[in-house]
Amino acid sequence: MSTGLKRCMYCEDSEGTDIEHFWPKSTYPLMAFDWLNYLLACTRCNSNYKRARFPLDGQGMPLPIDPTTDDPADHLQLTPTTGIYVELDVKGENTIDICGLNRDVCVAGRTNAWTAIEVLIPAYGPELL
Ligand SMILES: [Zn+2]
Image 1 (cartoon, rainbow, N blue to C red):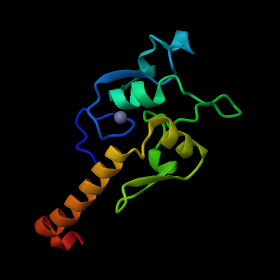
Image 2 (tube, rainbow, N blue to C red):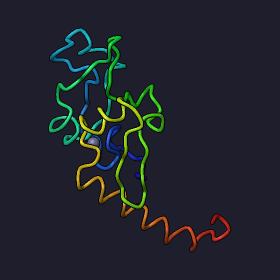
Image 3 (spheres, rainbow, N blue to C red):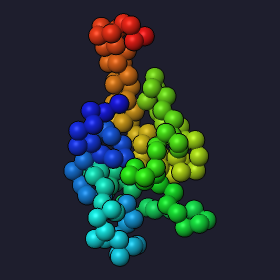
Image 4 (cartoon, helix red, strand yellow):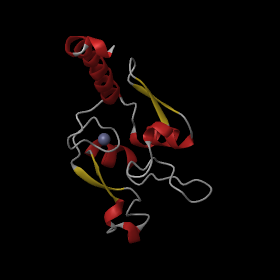
């Protein structure tokens, strides 16, 4: 639903401007300089929502979706007409909450993208419908 250029790896709505530590450096200092722990995120997701929130499951695995290893579609379902993500499991539920994926600006961006797609597809390729 986003342009895919320099977008935040969590919300895809904003420009990725921050280097986010998936495993929070305040809680996991040994991960602070691990290259694979760095994600491109927007300031809103990194500094206002996720921060050091990082719940683990009973096996010690992260409950937020790791966009570098997890397929978000396994954990989240988007309803394009409303722009709202619905959780498919506990990982999806945690990610929606921790990253604020259903905040107003993200929901509005997704519904706007859906409206544009509904207009553009018939104009460019009615055979696609
Ligand atoms: Zn974001």
